[in-house]
Image (cartoon, rainbow, N blue to C red):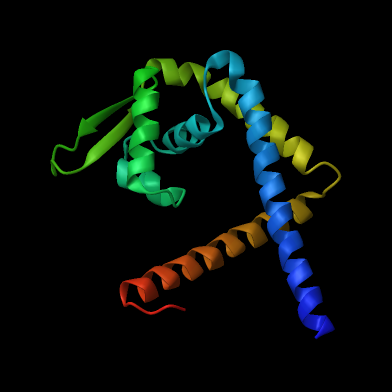
Length: 162
């Protein structure tokens, strides 16, 4: 019985730790971006496009496990700020591709610097091997959480509660 409480407490600590980390990272980015009128959410979408311009809206939603409507709203905001343009795919008119504008390219260096500053602060005192191991574990945890949620969705679609 004590074991169950210890496991529950550890689970809750992990949940809290992840939430606090996420919130603190967002606060840092939002403060850094205040003058630019950008949000941490804007930066996430821009970062995807810096990696590969011309992604589809669905690819962007999938990358962050965000629903399509939320992604569309975020991209509309970026479009209003003049940072992206959305175009209908030439081969499949149902698909919208997202492209960076020149204005967005002007932010690239500043966003890279912020990301580097954040990473330097988060990984301070850790060796390269420790950082690599940590990142691998976080990615693996993200994949396991994604599979768990996909399983939940399948069960719900089948009318099964857990």
